[in-house]
Figure 1 (tube, helix red, strand yellow):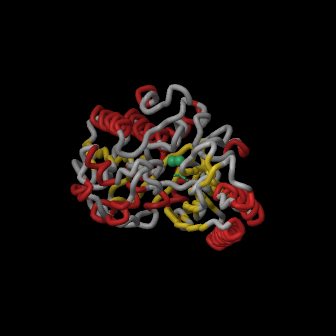
Figure 2 (cartoon, rainbow, N blue to C red):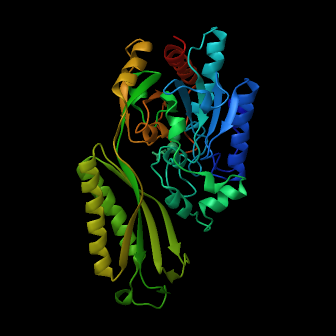
Figure 3 (cartoon, rainbow, N blue to C red):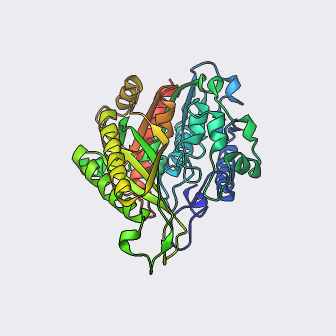
Length: 401
Ligand code: HGY
Ligand code: MN
Ligand code: MN
């Protein structure tokens, strides 16, 4: 399975993945998912928001009694030049865990579904977890229809080009009501398990986190002839804001990253008219996050005033703190023998979004370097196998009483 999926969307030069929502690469990932589902005799279904489902014990979610389904899965899309494991490890492990349960002769007493949630990374349209947010009613149809990519293509146009009906998207409470538990296995995006020497961990919480777009409007001018005192250079303001972001985050024990920038006209010999910078900030609690982002914006406005630059700040994506449901978290720990480390994370996940609608839990698989959102992302095969066996144990405990 892993080898079949690995080449899809991998860039030959960077060896990173470019699996963006509603692109041909996304189509190929979805085809892989459907083939894996159908080769196992699972009932394949695509929901109104483009999320993929593979059912055992039901032909469609409509056959499932309220709260009866146990669901596991993750996402197949990536950040630009992302790693091989973030997302796919959860989907591949879900199919492998089902194979393992069949090998064990497990008798399912509840319907099981394996899922691929669309556009978790928000790499193309800027909003994380679009597929699960739409299903959970956390992203309105109007807001979704307004999303557009760097080339100005809107989400509806992209969905239509991929053969999906953008007018069908929207909340899916009927479907979510059938789910009793959603468990997402994910490669750890940190080193906690490496430091503790464990192969598998259980998630406790997800830090509140968001994305803000800073637009620094200056005055285009000639790089060679404009005196320094006459410049209104937005790149200067942007640079000072990046340094302020690091300072604010360090002071508060949070994280802040300006990882994406767009410059107009983006010419070596022209002072920019516009510098657009995207801030990703996350913190252990909401108050700290608010302090950090307010501090960064305040500093940016001071610099903007000093340089005669106009600044606008827009929050483009936000996820409040997620506490995974304690009963399910503790049940997973009991099933796995009670000695599994429980750890928080600063990374967002579909399981986090869905935790507002249904009981969800996460299993983490050791990442020896902690590196993620990079081609260097890695997890050792025996750790991945340990993750599959742990997921199989969890699914057996939840769905095969
Ligand atoms: O950004 C995140 O935390 C996740 O990888 N979407
Ligand atoms: Mn990710
Ligand atoms: Mn992920």
